[in-house]
Length: 195
Image (cartoon, rainbow, N blue to C red; front, side, top):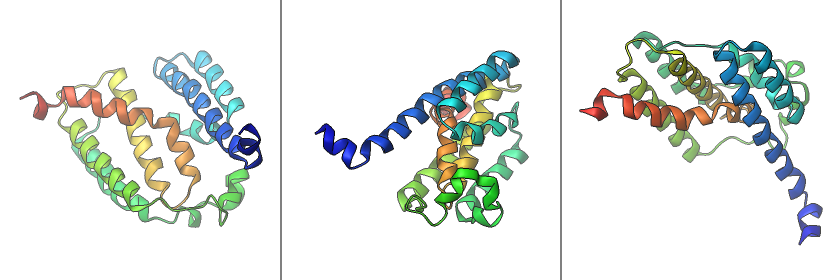
């Protein structure tokens, strides 16, 4: 059984996923420390994450996108942008030399579009998540709310881009935890659900 697992290359595929999930855990801890303004500690976690899996380097620039809270205008802008993201051919805007090792995805066996069920799930998350954030009772978001909102919006953007270009799905995994946290957290803070 072990021979078949290694021989059919499942071992190498699974190890990549395991390494990425381990890198995600260090990345999320580093992300939390950046919101607490503990930059030295967060940089240590980011270095560990990127040494475990290279896709952490692609996710690193996204930590500088921050929202303290979403105004109705910004929420609507993100909503409408999220509707068209799965339709945009990202490869047209990003030169292949900027992608480094991920440029081999283009036209390769892993460059597969996500299916219709992913699209339905994506639009459900966009509508429900942004609705909950907008209906939240928080007049002024604290640092914790800002981290959740920022992580969720980054996740939506990366997940939306991943429909046409697979490496963005890898990057979205670093912020996927905020999907669950945001939905659960803002359900309990929503005026709609508390009445």
